[in-house]
Image 1 (tube, rainbow, N blue to C red):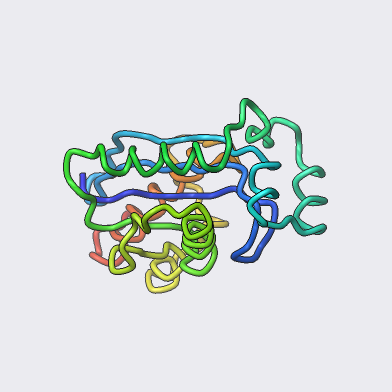
Image 2 (image 1 turned 60 degrees about the vertical axis):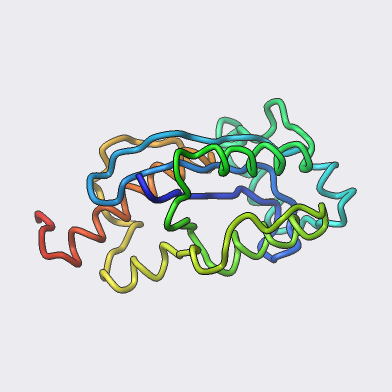
Length: 183
């Protein structure tokens, strides 16, 4: 398995946003097989102490959601502890992943880099390995909002579950681009 899907849950829509959850799942894009998973909730106050910010519309959106979609409130850890654990998790892979894929090249990567710089952690994701699912969806002409072929009905707005959902989308997009998609 050479790829990692990553997802963040945040309390904002800008690169300086508070993160409340990091999820990541190792996967094989050819077969859709998944492997090791990382999922940690992040303490909001530790992010605010770091100078990260929340925005009103995102807070309103989150707290307008059903309570079972706010899994990030369960047993959060400091942002520093979570980043250390995530860096260790990435380094513990049997081999370095060739690609790390996220929902947005501007959102997730920017936030991760902002926090890493503030915590003085190494930038443990090389920019050449970053990929964006939205670009893949566009190239494959794939609308993830209407596709009904999910193998599992993953819970929404949980970072690790969102990773697994996005892995299914990526596998489907690759089938479309290879011409092996079944309609």
